Image 1 (cartoon, helix red, strand yellow):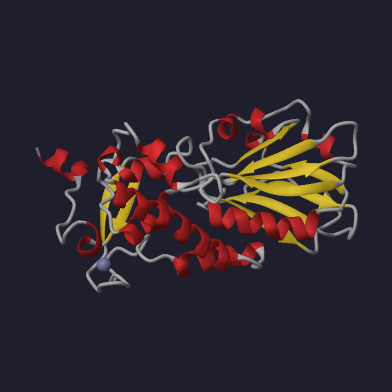
Image 2: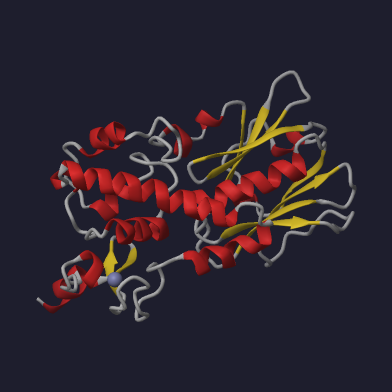
Length: 292
Ligand SMILES: [Zn+2]
């Protein structure tokens, strides 16, 4: 799933391609991705893109041209992706079994635009057309953006105070911090050398400082690495840059210990026992529950 750094890079890439260009046609190929119906997606046709931005993991394409601005808000979810197309067919796409979910074609150059695709059977890709991005419930709920200068140490301290959950769950909760998901929460905790199961409220002041720095450094590094990459190159770059996430069984790049995996909520997390949990592997609670 694309997280803050990938969506940030995607937003910068799209801003270069789209700003100042007029939208010719919008084809909702898989109607189930549309989360709003009024105005219809076709209301974007004939409008000129004025800005592309990011809110958490949401991509926001703003188009003016009419009396009021409209925003095309995209959440790529687990298996959604955006493909930039330089040679699009002039014919409308046919709904079918393929991954194509929505196509946006530009007036000029005439065969360019982008496709939103989604692989697999678990559909999560979500597209909305709204007058204000805050009308999208997922955006209205977002906590502060960790790359916003307003996200200071004091801001993190306030977010963690009285927080009874474990760090792993807190970091990827979009209503606490916007944009961090399963991958970068693993990375941040590895950089901070903290157990994913540590209780957030138990962090000492020096630990809060370490975590604050780890959040900023990890995300800024990832944004830096993906800057300037085209949409098609981002997934590979994300994989290369990860230190522990998705690397169970491989050596930790810091200490050489074997990276381990443990189930967490609806998925799994990866961590280094030597760097993060005093050398002790975390108990897989799902597994131990089954054994009881
Ligand atoms: Zn390690």
